Image (cartoon, rainbow, N blue to C red; front, side, top):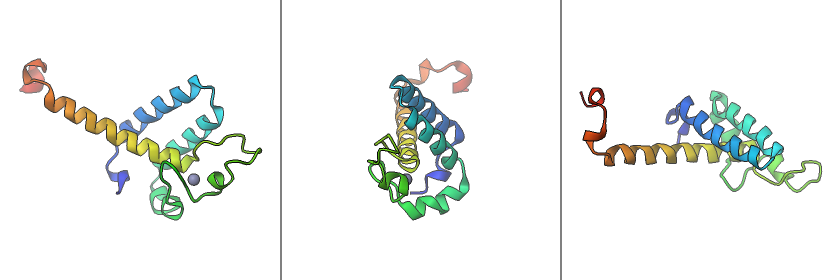
Length: 118
Ligand SMILES: [Zn+2]
C-alpha cells in the first residue's frame, strides 16, 4: 500500500495533533519525541523509498535499532519507534477519512447548506 500518495498533509497533521495531545496527557515525553520524528518522516518522500522499505515497520514491530533495544534502560521507553508510530498515524488517518466518507454519504442532503448542494 502506498500511503504517501493517499494521505494529505492536513490528514497527517490531524492525526499527529490527536496523538501528541494524548501523549501529553500521559506525560509521555519519549513518545512525543518520536511522534515529532514520525511526522517528519511521513512528510519526507525519501522515507517511503528508504527506511520504510528497509525496516518494514508495522504498528507492532520494526526492524530498526530503536525498536530492537526497546528494553534497554538507556532508552527509558518501551513504546513504538518513530517508524511504528508513523504506521499508526497512516492507519488512523485512513480510518478517519473512511469514517468521514461514510458520514457524508449517510447525511441527508437537506442538512447541507444550500451552497454545498448547488
Ligand atoms: Zn523503527
